[in-house]
Amino acid sequence: MGKRKIDAPATNGPDMRVNLAGIAMKNPVMAASGTFGYGKEYAPLVDLNKLGALVVKGISLRPERGNETPRIVEAAGGLINAIGLQNPGFDGFTKKHLPFLKKYKVPVIVNIWGRSAEEYAEVAGRFDGVRGVQGLEVNISCPNIKRGGIAFGTDPRLTAEVVAKTRRKTKLPLIVKLSPNVTRIGEFARIAEANGADVISLINSFPAMAIDIETRAPVLANVTGGLSGPAIHPIALKMVWEAAAAVEIPVVGMGGITSEKEALAFIIAGAAAVAVGTANFTDPGIILKVVKGIEAYLVRCKLKSVRELTGSLQLS
Image 1: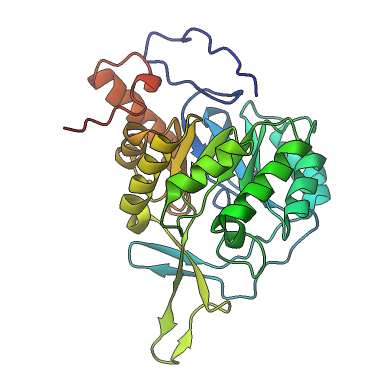
Image 2 (image 1 turned 120 degrees about the vertical axis):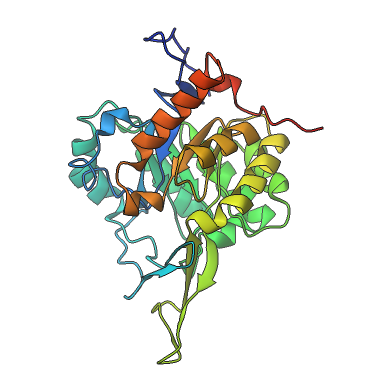
């Protein structure tokens, strides 16, 4: 995938821009899929033009209802959800949501998923050439659906098959979102890279559950869900560091970002960009606060570019 040139900074401040396999971002902070809807929900609260990129909620070939309710519950240090990738399908997204997003000058990345490698590829092929879509994030890591998702992200053979078939169907930059539920994350990162991924993103949520001790029943109708939020940040940080060391392509780090500190740690560990997820629910303005925090850090450390910080971890 060809890379677009990063022009000179527009201001005298540090250069915050990054380029993810041709996706030119004005700063390294993205809205994570599943926590920012389709942009319209947050537009009254956040200037979308100031985001690095916006990754929309997962899209499948056809509309999906998701899991039964209740499907979200707070947990110590985070949130457990079992939404089940509810979405309007390709036609619903391109007709109802994409026209709204086209009004903004922010790269739109579409998270895609399927129940087979062929479905992943078909969704990717449908988006190829669709105006207003700058990239695809291949979700092989969702723990909340019966077939697909995490199954593809924890089996090396299936990971290779999904990525390879999807790659053949699109010229769009391909970001592969990895599952944390493996023992050797570097191996899966290398498999994705070898089969055509342009970028790696990680991590998704961890399988978890909550029990109502009065009823002695699971809180979620799906029984289990995915844990996200501050509790998973230290684990995510380790996995991003390991994945970044294993591949040559850019890495997007996510998991438990609530301030610029967690975002900076991901970048120092090797991430070219970061994504903010669960924290959007408690503070819709958190992404822009993280952007400002990173910029202030670069000024304080006298760094000219955020790219100078990527992979700058000091090991004695």
